[in-house]
Length: 192
Image 1 (cartoon, one colour):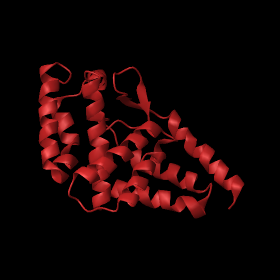
Image 2 (cartoon, rainbow, N blue to C red; image 1 turned 30 degrees about the horizontal axis):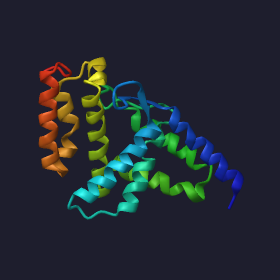
Image 3 (tube, rainbow, N blue to C red; image 1 turned 90 degrees about the horizontal axis):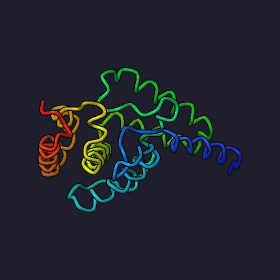
Image 4 (cartoon, helix red, strand yellow; image 1 turned 30 degrees about the vertical axis):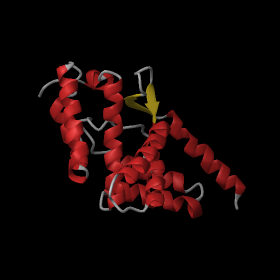
């Protein structure tokens, strides 16, 4: 074990706590950070696995959930509603390359899992995407649409980004549609 490399990597990974997201924690008192989001996403995929009928590699899925946003350390979180997403992948890939240099023998798996999530070709990556879409919706419902209102988000935008949920877990998507309708009726989303 190379303790200096390990501790340097751990300090660098700690920077994920400094990445502020658009979503507010429950109650809307403050924005969540990406490390909190990664933990919450890991809990969500674990529960989705337990509640669902999909046969997935749960250990791989939990690892993927923990590392899926590490690439945000250098450039921050890009809102799923941002009009320009063109640089996101390259920026996050460069960050993953840089971070993996701290301890390549251990962190190579981080990069592979991150890339698998980005490519969306496996059941595990698709289930993680479901959780990654579900949680911000829950946060918005709990904060009376605070993040949606700040970004002037519409019903159609929320339904569009939740298409991965529709494709993988249709009953959950129907529930999301009902929540979106409720949010529109309360004025938290525009009805377009």
